[in-house]
Image (cartoon, rainbow, N blue to C red; front, side, top):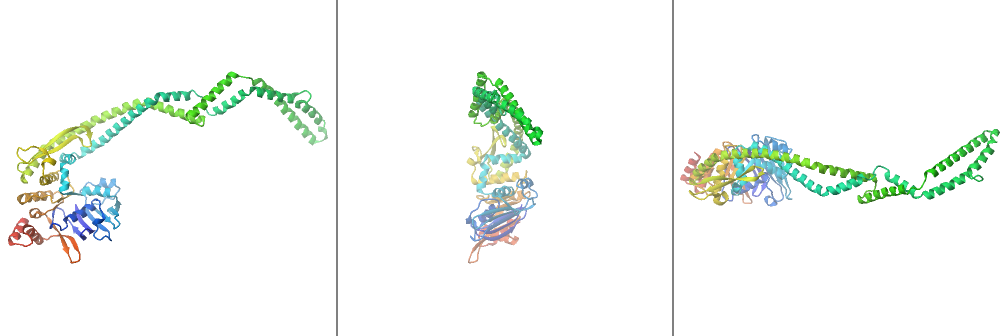
Length: 550
């Protein structure tokens, strides 16, 4: 419940500090006294957007702070969701600087305006003529039925399964789209894969083929050079081999003249043996290197294939071609596995849809079961509030698709006159009738669930006398389970409050200020008498005011 409200530098409010209690509080004041300013300030701290026109003194910041007792509200999950420290005595604060910058706090922790609003909506429900229009909306109407049917847990289970269902349906759509696209590319991907699969793509193959091609392309030149080299080495008269043999014989004769000559002889012997080995190698190569046009054509074919594949796939190396082959293989494999995945996803979707159908049917039956009692309570209360011939019924339509509330679509229909034609609330109910219907619905809801603090802003507009007395009694009864405020011009309603606050303007000759005070019992008598008979207090008005309070 709201326990304290502080407003500084807002519109006509200089510095306002008010403490509130549980039960039923009424707020009165002359037209233009500032009741709307009070509501405006409260709305700001609950998350409404602001502008600089709200500042009383444009050189100072505006601060609004509201303190709540929240131990009986199930708000710990919300605090955890936004990573906030939970405190049973929670303070909401809003600051608006002269620059126009706005800041919001929950228990001194900075928060976004959206978070402030999310919490604010759970703490206070403000009902003006404008907010009463939500009664005509199907979403609100279904929320009412679900609250009466105690469908909270069932709806939580249903919505959790609905997320699974929605996700499974999206996944199935994506898989089918992938399958369609894969089928279009399947033949081409298989062609590319087979082309790469049949190509030699092991590491180093390109360099190996290029080397072999160069050798086979130049066989005659190679043989010619080998033959010339062999002749230089083995010529009988001037060949290196023969000359080295003579050199070896000459040097070997010097070995006995010292170790230096022996080393020189050994080196000549090494050269002779190396030349002899080279001759053998050249002779071996001459036997091996032979023209092979068939092999040359085969090697050239492999090279041209690799060059072509590199160009086609924009690959600079054979290794990159091998990677592309692997990727194509995975695509082909995935395409082949898609049908299995689709079958599995279809099965999941079907099972989830079946379970959703069962839950939506449970919701439907629970809603249908509560409707007769709800209609009876509503019509009875409407009769007590001056609409003796009012009739109320709820039409049900079944949706083809699962919504976040099941498959039910409710329409509240109303007829104000006996035998009159039923129509939607938006069409058939006046503003005053909507206000009374909303009040009754809220009073019924209060019997079924813990509602936040509720503030009725002149919900009794357009009624008087005994009807206003009964509306006040309804709000008074509601306050036994919750905190209720009523901003009213009617003394019959104001007198029902456990606490009575007055909003008024104060002019000191220099500045006009809006103030708000809690009235004593004596002050209440005077306030009610003025509401009954004007400023000129008569004995009858005072007596009537005392009678209302008693």
